Image (cartoon, rainbow, N blue to C red):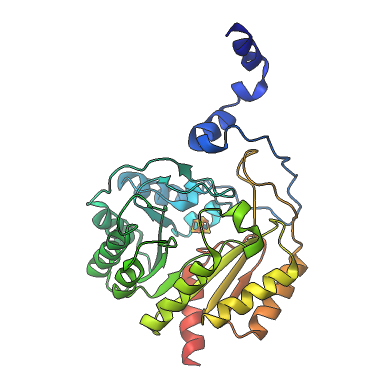
Length: 325
Ligand code: SF4
């Protein structure tokens, strides 16, 4: 016993609050060996948070006791987005029932749903004056419908208080939750996003609880249910995927009639998460964008700092114009 305490006291990680926080958030990863954290290249530089408008967004989020994926996922764009009062709301708590190797959201057994949450989100959307809002969630494999009815209630509450605001949902995969997708689609979000996250060869390592072809089919089914809804999906690169695998994934998404593809660089949240295999240079993102347009996507966002909700409002306007055009 004494020896263990001595070792911990001599280990700088035991005194490092960031590492302690990481272990508390991801108990399933605590026993994994540390991975090498590479220095970020010059092209990955972001605006630090702290402007007056960032503070105003922060205040409204706190007052409504809301969770945002911007914070939970340690998104690098939080300074830029919150300065524009764009925040992506994460409903159904801050604890996820999956344990993906890339994700910084806390893992564990979530609390029961807050039935007031749809109204709180709607209030924050109205106070921020959002023209377009993105609502996402943790995975809730513990709920019979995966949280689909809560998604639908949140869309309904936003429509009731901010009728001109367009709503984008970024949902989990609703694996083994029959009828869940139909419930969300029936609430008529303007954009239905579900991220593939990575190429199929990386699933067992990166996203072990998910099934690639189930995710593709989910997106295809949304379009079958309601062709008016824009569909969207995104991946991170730099996780060890090959270029040909990315091109194949684009074909799979087009087969499912997906409108909008986002591609961004994976960034490693802690030493216990999946390592960055490669920092993909900006020219490669441009090449992916060119190929994706050639394959027929209505809209493509592919830059190192692209995240699925980054510039979502501007992108929604472009989607609408291109569909009309
Ligand atoms: S890109 Fe999305 S998750 Fe990141 S700060 Fe902006 S709105 Fe939040």
